[in-house]
Image (tube, rainbow, N blue to C red; front, side, top):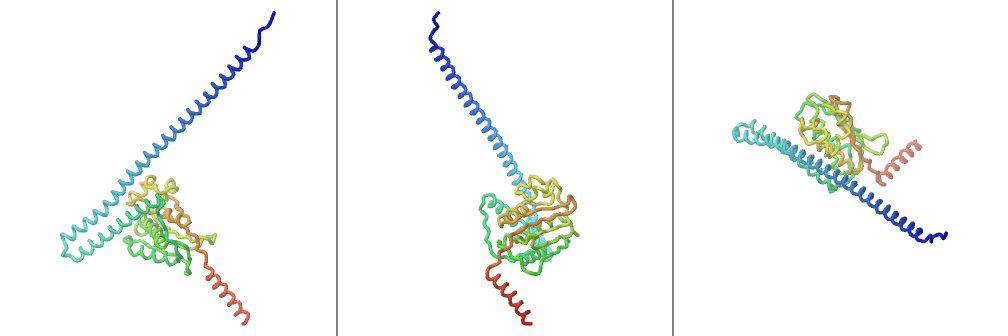
Length: 307
């Protein structure tokens, strides 16, 4: 019996193999395309969710902003009404003017915070660095804040007698401390105590400024997010009852980070007060200052030897 030629079988085998390879290739490509489509769809859903969240936060922020602006405007309108109806009473005039002035300054700070936050979000906020004596600046800022206090609060300043220098923006550092003091005043009942501290930390590389109060405290669940830019969505119960958008603390964090420092918040819990602290890098002493210090030390040694 004569066997047939194996060539047709070989060609069939090769053809089937090629078809299998092509089929496997396109199946893998299809799987990859489906996987990519699923990934893109998941990203799209996540983006849509973030967009809805941002829209909700924007609406809530605008609602709170409108609420906070309406309060001082109502007070100013009341002051104007007093001036119109009882303008012949000196005491009424004085009280109305003081009320209007206070609320206008409050609105100015509020609008300033909103504009600063907008600049920070877009990376446009600039700071003007200079050599600043933090000891003197903290003392002056604390005194200025105390002069405007309407509550019966005790404010204590703990600071060294010698200057402590940083490279910072004088106006912004004062704003950071002012925001912390205003926050402490807002959440501390009359008769409470606020302590402002300034000094050099344990590393001897940073200066710290802290504001400690005996106020309402902060719940543990709120503490981790208290310094973020979107805290008004996380702790409305902590801020809304007292008024304010909660931007002051976020401003402190943003400005501290622009200076290369850190900011932290501490509280033992509700009703147990709170402490907010920011740190700034100490300024590197100038060469002339180092030479002057070395000269003083050498002169002192020589005087001792001659004695």
